[in-house]
Length: 118
Image (cartoon, rainbow, N blue to C red; front, side, top):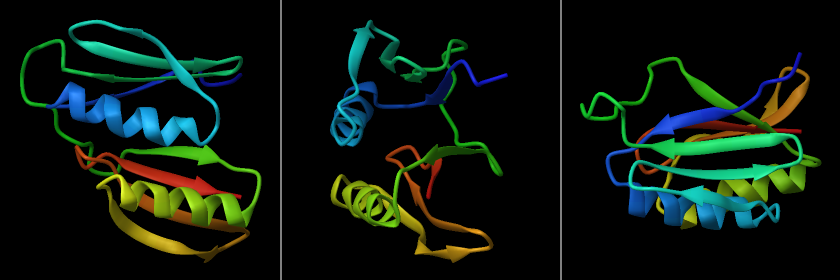
């Protein structure tokens, strides 16, 4: 089994779209669709979206919820961690060894937690 897609909520779709456009540009992943509520990015085996919640309530980050991205190297983990900070995200755990993985943690503009590991 593999994960089909992941969606994170946003309260500012335009800002979130700019953030993830720059974020995914690091991998050559481009937007495939955008409408008034959602923006999608997709590659051969990857799909991700930001969305204004369907119930029209404020988007909130999930406490304990995290999106994990597997990267090819420790350098890539460090580079992407720095990129997110440059884009206005926040550090939630500096790059370093954690158990058998080298990983880093960040929060996006809506406080969604992302993990990069190699």
